[in-house]
Image 1 (cartoon, rainbow, N blue to C red):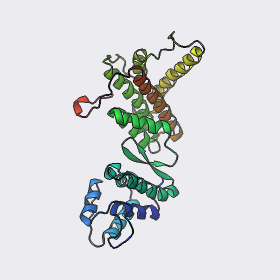
Image 2 (image 1 turned 60 degrees about the vertical axis):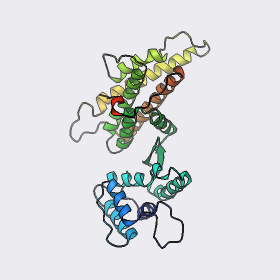
Image 3 (image 1 turned 180 degrees about the horizontal axis):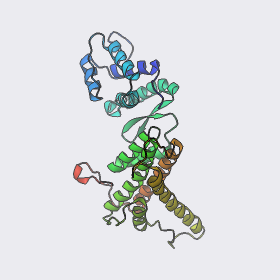
Amino acid sequence: MPFPLSLQVINALAEVISGGSYNDSTPSIGIYRSGPNIERFMGACNIEFQVTGSRVPNLVDCLIQINNGPDAQETLPRIIEAASDPRDFINEPERHGAVVDYLNGALSYDGFELRQTGGRMRLLEAGKSTPVLERLSGIVEVISFDTVQRDLDRALDSSRSDPEDAVTAACSTIESVCRSILTELGEPLPDKKDVTGLYNAVRKPLGLSPDRSDINPLIADDVRKVLSGLHTVIQGIGALRTHGGDAHGRERGFVRIDERIANLAIHAASTASLFLIETWQRKFPALPLRRHDDTSGRLETN
């Protein structure tokens, strides 16, 4: 991501966090926060901040210092996403929309946008999000496939800064979906737990084998080609993880893939994962999609 951000974004962010000046008669864009509340907000973002004078100028100075520092790319997205957290606007959803629009109006000139994926806001490069990614994030948020969401978040966060890790996470996304579905169906995990082995294990209960005979003859050959292609794509992502990802280590200073290939793997993995989840929901409509609200229900991935 290109940093530092513009001063306009910093001022807009300070306006949203602080809620504006106490003496300002115009309605606040964000949530009005007193000095101690701003300190608590910044503390929750792991930023040491103390109001020693006027709260808004102090906050702007702090954000400018972060923006010009070495950790801006890691720290500022966290602050921006926290400032637009939808949970702070549960009773005022229209106000949340206004905050997001306000921030996006400034962010667009820097090539960024805030998008809601599932239950959280994400700062993305403009145009990076797609309907498939948003749909997949929304589904895994609802059914609490927590490992899937973590792998997807990791892939998106790493695509530019660490494309090799993004490919590894994209492959893990499919693996997490397959493992989660097998567990929900009470099916045993295969002996070979790589992405190809897991997909092969989940194909039968989901009815995705290319050689199935119960398909309308008019489209049977077409469906078989699509399913065979899906298998090939998943195998390819697994091979790319082995040869181009970081799952098995990497040489210092040697970059095997670039952001384009990482994004290709992310979007392909997301499309495959979404298809598997939607197929499961269609084939087993009476099977409740359990929420894993405690650690005992969480699945682990290799």
